[in-house]
Length: 463
Ligand SMILES: Cc1cc2nc3c(=O)[nH]c(=O)nc-3n(C[C@H](O)[C@H](O)[C@H](O)COP(=O)(O)O)c2cc1C
Image 1 (cartoon, rainbow, N blue to C red):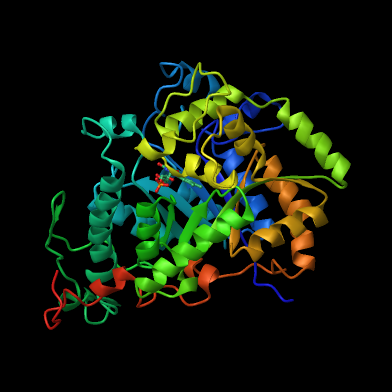
Image 2: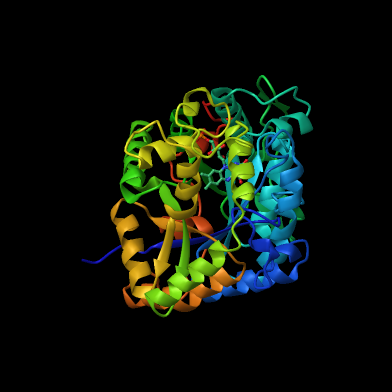
């Protein structure tokens, strides 16, 4: 059976401890050097050589909620504090690479949509159209309190905010400048055509933006839109907007359910099922034999920090799991959660719908459910199982950086190439075209496209 290409995305964060708890203490990882450029340049070199399509930077703009009554554990574990702005890294990484897509997370909380749209357009120009945006709404209380709010906005209200925010940036990216507005006509002395550049006059509950967009259209206009979050509201948002969805499902069958459901919702929104690419989060420990891989896994497990994991996850869920016995049932918590619902829902799904799952189950699930350990052929067999469930690509999580990525590039990618799952030559072009093969800009079926031409004086649509 000939298979589609498997998309490869590297998952990282401009911080010490992202999702690899406790490993920062080891000599064979560069996590503690994250604040310098050198480890990032090394990483993107490995990713390009290894045929990766993109690197994805997670980000948060505040502390995770309290663990064991406070945030000491976060500081001790380097758990996303210190944590630096990923967008500031992008132009350096773009200059050091030719083909790699660069996806950054930015919350609707942290940047006014006008300045965010300008920043992204600038980066998309500088990178030749290789930028993606992971749209997040900030589930963390402290994030909200860092940006003028008394507390976190409720779960579904955050997605409504994202709807409002995306409308503003879409108007700027898609509608403010018509195609052909930029002339650079030296002979006539006309740099751009005023008749083709428009104010957007946006007014909504939170935002009032006159425009025009200060950036001329970049190669992709709108960056490739990613989303993560699989609650009902999250899936509805993904179905309308996302071109890439990051999922962390506990099994291929759980992934299939999310993928099918979200694709069906996209169809109902007038989009095509394959307008959305799904990237499953996975950790891979590869050895030349299965025994060697298992030895590596045991060695890595000896550095694992349970407190780091629980502080991160309970902080994300918004329920303090600190100091609780590990046989405490946590399944029922999913219902009342205002933070990240997907974590507990994923655990329940993986447990066949059982809600009596405990903290110990949660720890085991987070450590093992999405981990593949084996020789290259075994790893690729597993990746094919995920692909058979409808997943388009993987979101490779590291345990050591750049070691987990170079192991994958050196030992797994040759097997992927041998099976025709990853091309031998780099896929060139913009990130959108690389992922979809359908061009640099959004398809007409995407809601952002309705703003194309909407502000031209002759248009019948209005803002
Ligand atoms: C793989 C993955 C990556 C994520 N990255 C971020 C991130 O970088 N920053 C952030 O604030 N939230 C991040 N999230 C959280 C989501 O944006 C979302 O808030 C969360 O999954 C809850 O959504 P839900 O309740 O709809 O499931 C991530 C989630 C997943 C599954």
